[in-house]
Image 1 (cartoon, one colour):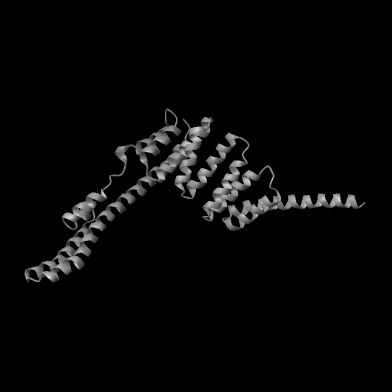
Image 2: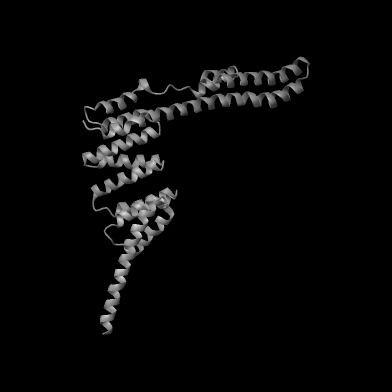
Length: 285
């Protein structure tokens, strides 16, 4: 009788454990979908505690990694993703999982990690469809890092040999003739070194150019005045202090304006490409 009770108790405990694990998984998915990543992490860990050898453990580790990444816990997320890869049944399944992890890294702005994983999938998979999909997301990765040549090359590999009109528009937009025209920060700094404000004018910022020229003329007068009055000590102190401060600041800001302008052009150009890429990616020849 005692042995039968013990067996029944064991069955009940296993049933409760399985139910708790299923409930934890359901709760975790719901919480993650609702944006409550912290609570989702708790539920996924609870599932793994109850069912460490369940068939869906790899999926749970993957979702755990996604939740941890949302919480900006990259080290722990990467560990969960590694467990998810280790649970894959074969190399093809691992590559599918790598692609999923890469997409999550892209969404989190972890472009280096995404690029490394996508390159691995596109290089080593023997599945043409998976390889093409990896090329698509490589193209997106290169777009977000403003690497236009590599983005065009990756998207060309994703699109069919004869692209559809929408795909041709993407490739045409990525052609060198349509890319941003940058201003050189080095040239801007050099021009403002020769004539304060000239670098700002080169960048296309007239009012900062006038401001830089005016301030440097004003501070320059604090050097010239004492020199004309034969007061070299005051002239030297003013040169090393007030004049150099505004002169060097003018050179720095000229280069910074060029950088800011280039970054703005990149972001605008990226927005143009992304506005037409989704439709082109789904287009069928």
